[in-house]
Length: 493
Ligand SMILES: [Zn+2]
Image (cartoon, rainbow, N blue to C red; front, side):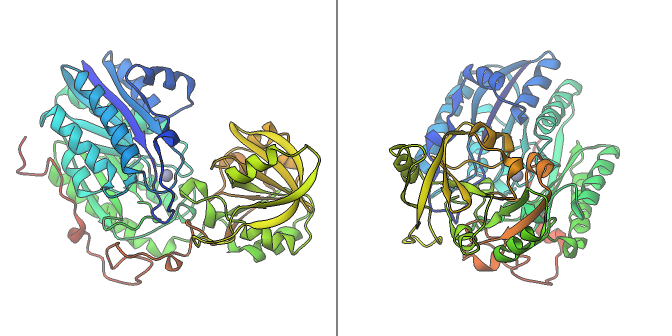
């Protein structure tokens, strides 16, 4: 049995004007996918591959491409990757099923919904009778087109995402079980008109923890194959932005709809319980609190400029505040600024010089900050070329490009001792578990930027209204938000 597999994923922030290009994705195609899987860590595609082979089926690789969250994907980059993917897909014969991993919130300039477009093309090639199952990020935005073209979606259940491989496995198992046992996959998704950030919806904390437990229970019911809460991605101004409650059933579209509506209602009933899962204050207040904590390192997430949600990662407003306080033993970073990075490379290690870097605001004409900097380290932040400069008592990491701050070991590679700092101000949203593990205390600093937690500060023009929390207290009737689906009752079998 031949199963096509592939993965193309990106979380696109429409407020960040810098588009994502092909080089940001480093795509591989065909058999090169196997080599990429072998060298990479756990991923949904890794899980998909594992299950396909465990069923004794043949995995037919197409594409593996992903990039750090950022601005919209350029049309050129998207078309190149889509072209490469479809070319591989067309090479394969006797396809029994298609299992993909897509993020679900990839947006292409001038085109919009990338996943809807891709699934449309895949459906055209494989035809109507071949099942397509896709694993998705928890922050996926389900669109009508996606629903009409695919047979089943399975979302991550953890944020931070630590179940990526397991979710890929679940998706592949769903597909292969349906193929080997011969039943039809049916699903229904109900939209949730809300914007919610990951910082308010960590899966281990209320209200998500009980909602996720609810999914586990729902999955035990007869004919329920999978259930997901896809929270959408708030920092994208597109008409179809929303979260969704989604249920996959064994050949029972009516049951999928009933359960998806129930799930959506349950979610909506908890709307008032969504709040920051970490203590959150404006930056200056966080700093004042951090200074009262004796043991370090206190980790402050500069969450308005979080590369993990598509921030530009070059806003130096927090540094300006820190410099007014004459801080010692503090780290700030990383600031992605290739020009400043290259300039530092031309200086001598240990020397002091005037350096301008970053930007003070998100305004297109914003200037950077100019300071006297001492070059302390040149090396790699994990795998990203970076330098460390001392600015007063603050060590500032300047990287060549954007990089998510996921692991303190990346700082060690750069010659730093993250545990020895009193305060770490990180370009991050909710702290990654690896930073949580070393933090004496964690705080969410509500800062400006393209990932501003205050949605009212962002200029949404396209999204549908009403939309929580921009609009408060409106009546929500899930039956008005049912998305069309491919295998609903009456649709062609
Ligand atoms: Zn996510």
